Length: 308
Image (cartoon, rainbow, N blue to C red; front, side, top):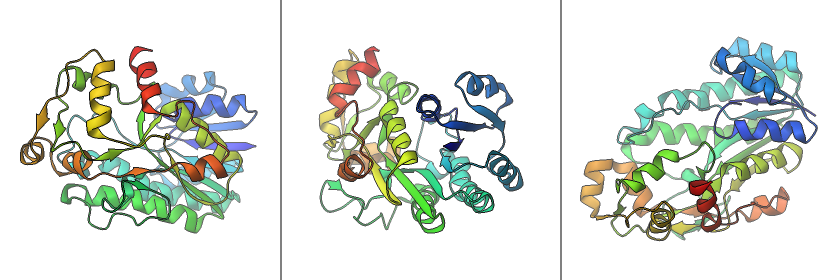
């Protein structure tokens, strides 16, 4: 098939593009940077330089490629040293998740592309009720004040793509780790800068980056329209996975911190992730996309990531 991949040099795209090419697909891949054209060509894709917010440029690029599938992986996440002002940090990504999504959907309609596969996140779930959420559970209704725009942008992708694309799929990824992802987190753990806040009761779902790329490839090739959690099999509270990561990284055990101090130092969003976050079930993706993670648990994947 002809597949058009946006955000092709990002954390996931750099694994997805070679996977699509190896599977026999004809890939057109976009980047905003002319300096990354050679990287895409070396991966076997036809590179296109275009800004996802340039509506006419996106439409022209998609129409020229005539893809059967569009994969939306556009983000603009560079430095994330602090998430105290989440909406400020994610401002460019929020624009790509709203205006950029609209541009791709308009391009898909113009080019006659039926299937659009877009990047979502399992942060969208309501942080109450049971610890593990399925795709039918309610989405968050009252996000933290510092992340209102960011959560609205995530929900926009989540709700718009399945509604407006004939075969719209949103993949609600867990927290990425692995090649090219979350390396600063390891350094923070080694420096004991990532404490367990208020008992670490928040439940996280992880996904290794090559596993996320494999699930995305599966969604390109099959699966009914809708949303899918792309996470490993092992949702776990912070109090469980963070000490394990410290051990794997050769660090001292993480410090413990009360909620008030965690909020003061790291902000509302980090406090929520540490205390009230909910994990996600991957049963639908495993069944309907016929996908299995190579690393079924972060217990298997963290050592390969940190020591690889």
